[in-house]
Image (cartoon, rainbow, N blue to C red; front, side, top):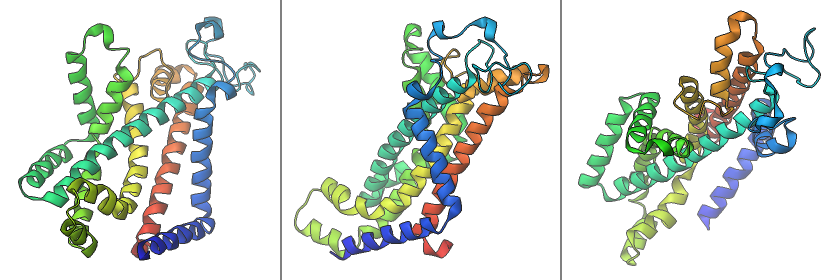
Length: 305
């Protein structure tokens, strides 16, 4: 009962602080608009960039509609293939959010499971998990994702590369982000496992998995939620980086990373809009998610206020 009222107090305090923080409100609004735009992209986008019949190469490199040479059909211009840039950005944002959320969910499940087990059982299992985490922390996340993506391309048959590219990309990014979840879950479990409710559950003979999932996990979700929010921005940036390098989504798939890569090839010839608008979309989305992550961290840790 005391734990229930503590959670209610935290939720009320979070809402109170959110209503008093214009920056957090703006960040939440931008994140919400990004999610809604991604979900309803087929309804909002003027054209479907995946449909070859919806664009024409003769419309390539058209500037934004408000410029002298612009076309009213394309609000912010077209890319090198004649696709409407606004539609490509909406679908690209959708792809980035799907890959980012899927990667973070995968990383959270893997990291929290290993962290809970390492913190609860300790001993050799804890040492093995933490040494693996230490080795991975020595490598940048982008290098880990590139390594896993390269291994998957070498193992999978060539004809399945394009079909499984999004799955491989999601797993690669997820495996590069699980460490923070594992370390935080392990440290929090070390604190919780010595409390009376855990000892009482052990005396009652409950299975360790049930104790960890039902007893310990709900009490350590606060810091894990903060990590999940921040890692979502990291996952979106990793997806865009891998796509920019040509090892993410297929080259003909409109994503923020591929649009930025295409735009950099033509920026010095005057087609600035191809790189500017996708870059601004990516930056605004990542900054808004990071602001929300900092807000949650400040709320859940009063010493940071």
